[in-house]
Length: 438
Image (spheres, rainbow, N blue to C red):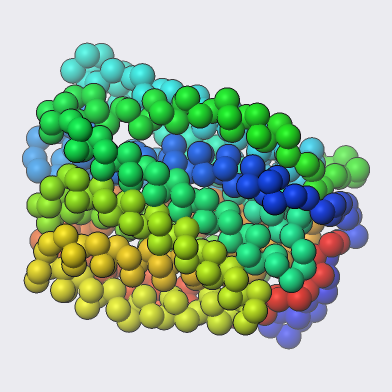
């Protein structure tokens, strides 16, 4: 790794496993992010249909009972992400990025198949929620190991002056997943009656993703490899090296991820918020996912483009400050005038500012890590941050609304977590132009 000044101290990387960095085509980069989009689609589609999944698998009495359990099960999927980060992230730092990315597609497919095929509680009783929880755990394991190899490949494949733009495609592909999920949610909600949607319609988006799995496997089999490790290191040696030599970056990276994870999950929660709190039609609720996904796609790429021209830190900080200051007034407006326009405008602002800041975070942390530990380090930062904060957000926000009766709970939760992330962001060094080849 390059030597970087951090808090006045020079930090040098170990002299192990230099990255092979052949130029790869835009087609190969598109193949990498297409598989990534499919995996995130499989994971987030659960959030869009949480109300119906809760009723199917968690028939608890009370307005918020089944929804709370459904939100908790959504959060369960985050708690195996650190395990996936350790196992699959380290696998990518031993065997290469490509085999790790093929493995994650296989794991997410099994989890999605279980979600699509498991009968409801009325049919098989307690086995139904148990299977759903197991599927969410498997999906979380896959995603915990997906982000590191995919992001490392994009950065290692990029020309030095376009690393942020390449890396931002990782987040932009998540926006594609959100948008496609939202579009399908709108179509399903329009085509089916509320009863059909609750009975079986929510399963259709899961089934569709299974039809695309062969495509994802094919394109990933044809990816080039950007890293080869000839050191014969074990998983323990790789993970231990990350914690011993790059602990500062891990801690700051997790704290930076905090607010992005909360913002993203509140964005995913907006479909449930619209139905449960604002009493808006299901079609309008699902439209928020479509709008949010499109904004994430556009502004992630815009954030990456700006990072390559203006530096990482200004793009990291400015959108987060704007979101922190505007989110409570926006929710006050939404509460005072709940409707299609106000609801979608809040979604636009939330998704756009979150995507710009997150795009900068997606490149600055990998640029601080050496090639020999890059996949594992990225995976750990992302998995720990999203597990501790993203995985608990929907449950926490649902509980806060139920406990306080205030529809502003999501906004205040986001504003408070943003303060913590802003402190960590300010402590990160600027990484534009650093050498990441070692």
